[in-house]
Image 1 (tube, rainbow, N blue to C red):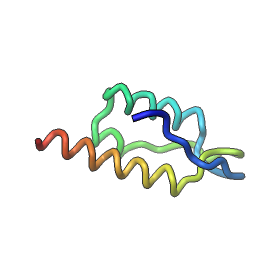
Image 2: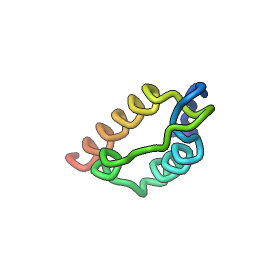
Image 3: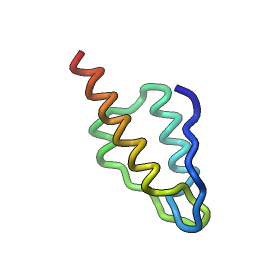
Amino acid sequence: MGAKLFDVVLRGYSRQQVDALWARIEANEITSDELRELAFDVVMRGYERHQVHAALLEEVKRLEGRSEG
């Protein structure tokens, strides 16, 4: 899948938290239910929140499709 890139904005989600989560996603160490329950800290110079939400929604759909197939 490769590393996910998000825009850095004035106030966004913690880059450290999102990067750590993305490492778990790439290693297939997380479930769709866990993704739905996540919350990130909003910090200065963080990742753009809408981009992160959209990417996580795609991952939830991917994980749910994999479990059904």
